[in-house]
Length: 201
Ligand code: ADP
Image (cartoon, rainbow, N blue to C red; front, side, top):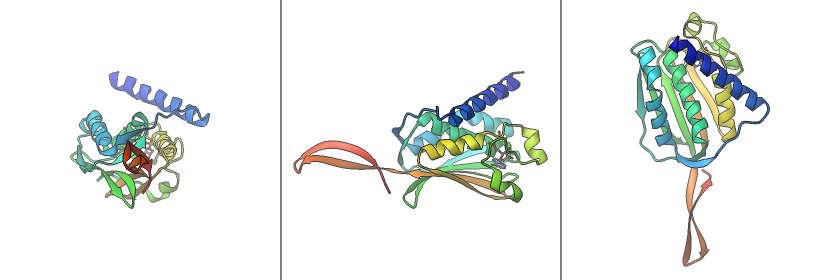
């Protein structure tokens, strides 16, 4: 009963988010944040998925990567990717999570050794209510809304979300978005007025 209540609660949250996105009413509180710290916290707070599906979450990366984001919404994206990675993994598998800089962007990756995503499903994966019709997906349940919501949230951050997947081998989802550069501003040559973050490569 407890599990069903949680699933129902998650479904209601997803439907409310879809409604907010559809009417452009989802609000964002963008603040400078360290992406590595944010991902590390999300991994810790989503450990229950790893326990439920018998997988091991392994976090790589220690870089300080400043980004401008809504921490609550970005944590929601990480939670969606972690829950999918756990759900579609085999028991005993490892899910690797990393935050690093790549080509001037901040990249967050979630990589599993699970069932993979069938080729014919790649094109539609970010559409609403889309689920691969394999028995694995039916077995674990879900709304088919999470990736659509995640894509919308990532795009509101000026980023992109994509994946590489090989059926039977595993899947890696990656999210890329702009890094914040810390620059010093001057009022005159001798008077440093402080530091400010700017988006840039
Ligand atoms: P949900 O997980 O609630 O069904 P999502 O939108 O998060 O909804 O995912 C949609 C579908 O994409 C899943 O049902 C599954 O078929 C596929 N999928 C997502 N992530 C993975 C993954 N890491 N490995 C295999 N299939 C995945």
